[in-house]
Image 1: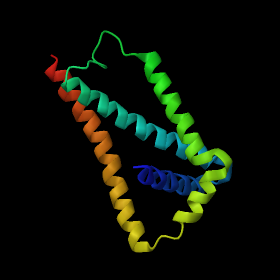
Image 2: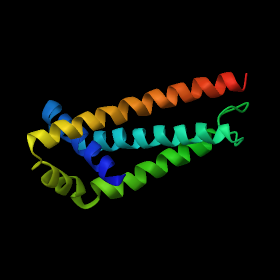
Image 3: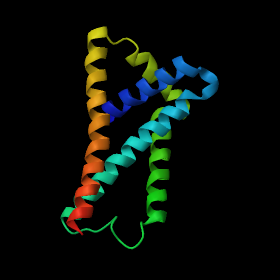
Image 4: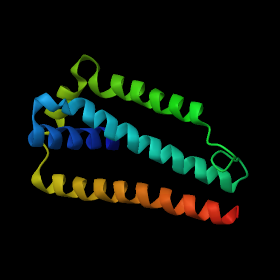
Length: 133
């Protein structure tokens, strides 16, 4: 799973670097993108837990403090995985060498992952909301 997040980070970083340059801090923008996707997947996991009676989201109020703590935890974890000591440079150096065919395949799989992550979360939230009336 970490390999997929490394590749997502690399693609977000290289796209941002190519589009806006180093002044836009592409390493941080990619960090936010990967952290958001992880947060979205954890949200989907939370929705699945609701099917088993563990009520996280559909209470009178969302657990804001817990959500902020989780999101900050993901940022810190991803900071050490991707940015600390220039890790993003080694990731870029490693993944820059991929063949055009492998790049196409990985891009396709990455798009499937991103689309499914958003779609499953949205459908899960709608389903749980209807289930709980």
